[in-house]
Image (cartoon, rainbow, N blue to C red; front, side, top):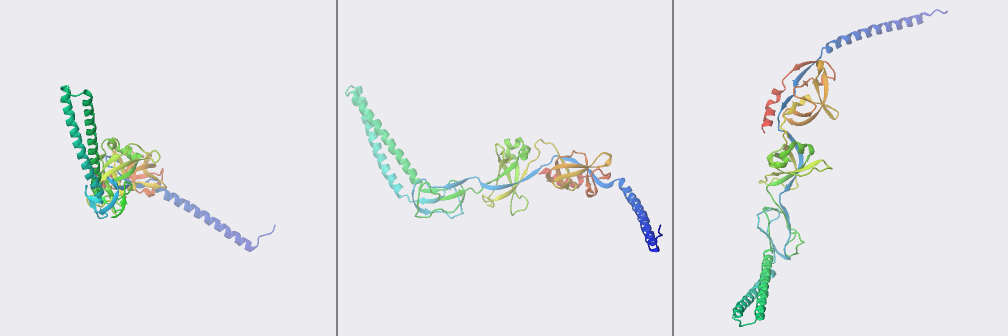
Length: 394
């Protein structure tokens, strides 16, 4: 057996020294890790607060659209040539204001002709009635035959019917003459004139459009949960529910209105229900067709208190919301939750928590499910009492 040369012995000695040093270092690190883990076993220091329950006025937000309460396409009831246009496009008009005038002369002539015809028919009918009365007296004295009396009676009835027909035709002619003036059917804002002076129009011609100006509707779709939450009040007295509206260029919801209508059925495909509110528009800010943000105070359908926690106690796990609850043996319990509306710094929890349970409000980022805790109880109520009380009072 060959003896190792000096170079080989030196290399083996160096390798043994490195392995010994690594073993000593590993043991030291393991001891340090155990030393560091020891304090964590005593529990992670966190602040916890008890879940509170309070009746609050919950609010939901929707996208809506402004609609006019009354709207009409104005068409002529009689044909003829436009004689004049008597409004400025886009102006406010009152009910009864004349907007267009159709040349009335042909209709005036027709009224005059039928007035004469009706007068002549009335004279003939009165004469025939006089002859009938005379015939009745002569028949009583047996001075004329029954046949002659009957003929005079028939003539009187025919002439009376003709007189009434001429009177009805005269009334129609007077209506046609009146309809040569196209008037605003209600107060509102008129559009542009679709035809101008000198054009021939008939009943199929749209002259202009008119929409009411104030108040206006705000229509929007609510989901099924909102409809169920509104409960009987939405069906029996929707006007008791208040809404707030804001336009696209406005912050928050500065305009107040009232719910006016809730549809009688849920759309089975979209799972939504049509709702409509009424809002004042005396300043002319709302124009039909504008999109609007709608905030509806839904409240609680059964009067039960809502469960609330601080907003900062809620964590996000991908697309789920969760909180950490102090569980048995003071260990962190992961709890998925479903959220409702915001009430100041508090958030309504619709599912996943019960009143009185303790949730972590500070130190959430240091906690893992099942980790031991060193909880310090802090009050949740004073932090948000002012904001929540103000919201509940609205």
